[in-house]
Figure 1 (spheres, rainbow, N blue to C red):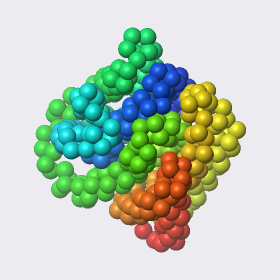
Figure 2 (figure 1 turned 90 degrees about the horizontal axis):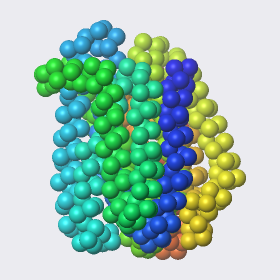
Figure 3 (figure 1 turned 60 degrees about the vertical axis):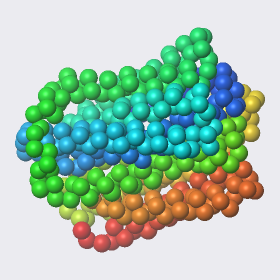
Figure 4 (figure 1 turned 120 degrees about the vertical axis):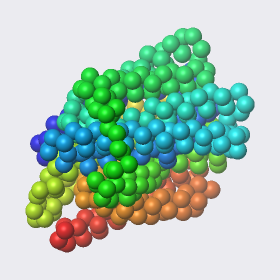
Length: 424
């Protein structure tokens, strides 16, 4: 727990920079583009992020899960094969995603409000988003307990977006200009990650890691683990972007802009749950590797208590500061976003409260169960959105997100009780 708390401290340090600077660059974007322009920008970035989430594997989890043993045994050859296999997996998913991005824009670009003028810029941004997938260097740094270096690399994104937003505002305040700034931030962040890995000597290890085809024999279950974690994370993360696309399709770019701003502020909660999971996952894997089954219930109860208290504190903070921050960032044009922000904040707190269960189940290689729970939650989300959107519009979609998160929370609680009372 102390090690996880130390890791979380480094992650929070970088995310604090993001939280502060994001208020500035979001404010610049919303006031420069207006409701409709910001909505169009939000739909483009949201679609690109959804696509990247869809095809990208959580190879950092694969590295941590299957790299602990070779690292402890000082088996550099096995570790090099694992690193190289993960890098190949990331590259392959990026190429597949680039092809899908082109196909989606050709078939449904007009339906998403992306005309011929924006299509090229959108495709370039989507390809950049895919080629800068940095899951492999992230996993290497976390396996080696170098969370401080990962925090420095993560901080590049908000700083680059902030500087880019100011330059775009001064020179060319258009959707294309902000897409260039956001794309440059992704490139700089990925370059920083790989620089950190190169300085630690792990890039040379990746080059020496021949024989990646032996990975399924060396690590039984690695293919199933990679597929199940990818499927689970795809459902969990893309479900945060899909509601935006639903709003855009149902109510147009203006409503999407209002929804996106509220979602961007509320997604800080989802990011906190991801940070807790990422900080705890390496330590949970190490703990459960040699620990007796009796420690499982104690570990899960502590994770649940900590994340639950954090969720309650954040909800109070949103109630006190949510509306002033929303007005400060968006201005009068976005004043109708408060109910959306409130519903999405509740959903984020529910996700945060159950993140410990997700982490432990993944570490126990039960990612298939996590995927089933996430799939059920997405199904509930879509059913609720279809029912509520005709009555409440964008707010109805936000309500549907909360209902889906509540369904996931209930199922996670049931899974936690079963795990705590069942021997491994």
